[in-house]
Image (cartoon, rainbow, N blue to C red; front, side, top):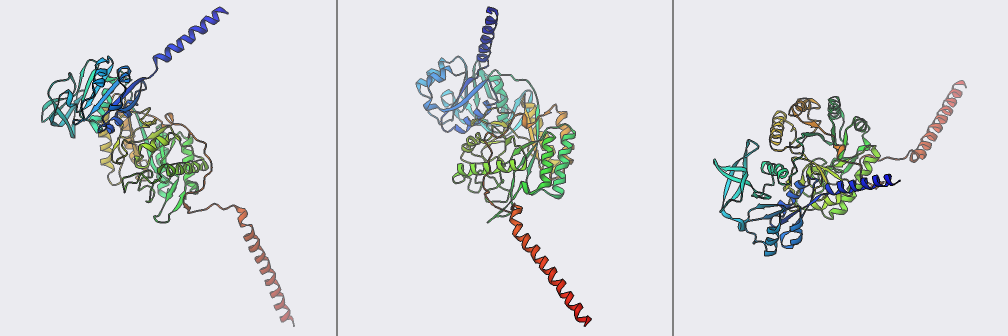
Length: 507
């Protein structure tokens, strides 16, 4: 008995030790207000590292004790920011952990003049830059970890001095952002295994699919299945075909499409809820659904609007017998407030994210999986683009070029492109899929990162006037009886008339 107790005690102790060893450290991202958007992008990137739990805070409201105790601290400042207070500076001096300065720190030596950089070198390769500048410095921070250049003059982009790092400028987009994303492995001492994952997404599938479009969708699915490629299908269950007083065509009104999608799920395909109608005052597919792009502003009463559409869309999927596992905002346009609301329905979102409520044009794409975004979502990114109609060959070249850039920069990329099956069915998939595999990528299924809706899905009333309305057969009984009676009476009348005519001729 004592031996059993001892073993149980040891096992419990090991569980406690292991749990402590794998507990996430805190990562604190401090901004000055002007760098808040940059802070949002950085917290999203830190969501790739499950070793850390990241959050943002305003520098003027930061607790010096939190700064001292955090596993990693990032200080983001603009050139015109005031020097941090003495208590903040003292807390930074007391830190022995990872400390990262990013932006344009005048108090650390940034000068008014700047470099317009045209080239960056990373992991032995050089990449052209477009519109990226950094301030000149009055002194060197540390050893150059990544270098840029201005007309062949080398300048530091990322510097390191022990546990302290300096990131010059605000690398939020494209190549500089991808380099920062990869360097975070070194900054946080979280190397991660160099595995390359890819995903293909069949886009904008909706109730209007029929005829040749439906055949091309089926051909695309059959090809991907035959190649053992996990695939996702971004579906919106309502198609609005007119402006003004629109009528809604529902997914359940298109049995041939439903047959294809239900079979595709059995073949391993993953349904993504691509909004409910993919429109806001537009024809479906043309506009966003959760952001007014014409006004570049919030939709009035956005939360009530959002929940109404989410509940109705999920009900239609349930009625259709389909099982969405994650969400994709139409055109990726969803403000931070609605990203938080989305966590009530799904834990995973596909695509890029808006990183500011100021404009839908400020969005972030990611080079790898984000396990916990600023708003608490797992993000399956897309950064390769799509095969465009009338530019198919050039689109494939562009996708592969971006893939090669991503592979050259990021050690554990998650690459994704999307494809509208109506363009040419499986034709361009047959060309592109083998080339992605030849670059060492393994295709991953979205369902491995998603799950069933987090709410109980119940029937809700329609939002739009329906193009087709389901009517119970019992509603037709009076009409059936009336028509049948009329037919019987007509037959009797016809027989009686013929009999009278015969009798007349006999006389």
